[in-house]
Image 1: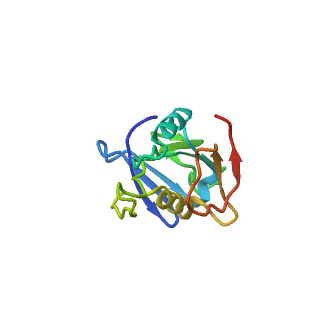
Image 2 (image 1 turned 90 degrees about the vertical axis):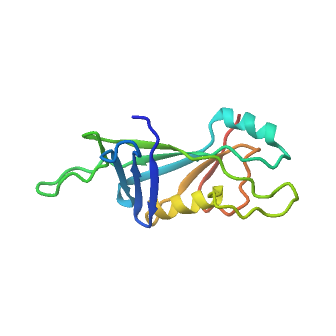
Image 3 (image 1 turned 120 degrees about the vertical axis):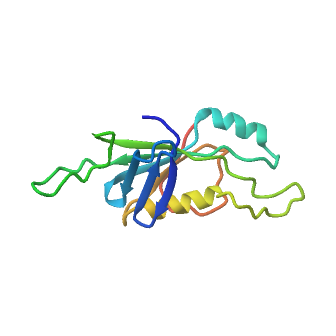
Length: 157
């Protein structure tokens, strides 16, 4: 299913809520996460080329969260991520655009909008159990200004 959801990040997971239908909730706990892939859509690299040297918002990444299939034990209840009475195998999240890190005057921008690094740290804290990492797919245009302690794969665009 597709839709716009609000995200609430916790230290042990993320809760997505549909603002139009409060009963539609997706709750993902750390224990449900098998792997995470962080990447940009190919068309976003075209936008990045056009933004080179400009102080504009950057397109947000896509985060693919692959979920574990947890076998139900008798009396234990279903521990899978359920949405509309179906167990999900993955959730794909399109992050919003990131604000520019420097303004027109070259000074750092201290805005209220979360930066790429804020999202990275938040998702890592919320969804990565110990021993888990985020696989980041990059191309030469995609150079984070912060440390990512994960597996990085350089993709061709």
